[in-house]
Amino acid sequence: MQSARRQLAFFVLAGLIGLAVDSAMLYALAPWLGFYGARVLSFLGAATTTWAVNRRYTFDGHGGDKPVWRQYLQYLASMTLGGCVNYAAYAATLQWVGGSFSPLLGVALGSLAGMGFNFASARYLVFRAHRQPHS
Image (cartoon, rainbow, N blue to C red):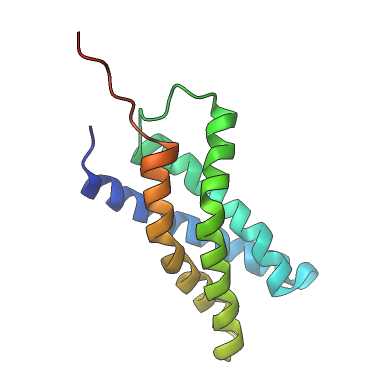
């Protein structure tokens, strides 16, 4: 079994990749959807990206008894609360911090705010290692 420290390090790395996807999508979609509407889609893009990275590298070999689509949906569902925390921090940043970089700062602060909850739910719910019975 992989150590929690190693998993956390890879989870953070996946989160940084997700942050890049999130930010790129946010700024690409904002001209059409505004910064609030674009944030919803950019979060979904980031969550999909982090699921793929976490599935392959962070929690490799865990939760493999589920169909891939079920694991993906469970991952998205378990990220919902963390996503709400993330979005609240993002919206608060947009309200309290001025300037052209406030959306980017909001994405970063939102990501940090939801990370602890998201790691725990990914590790203990979605990618939980199933113990083999002793013979």
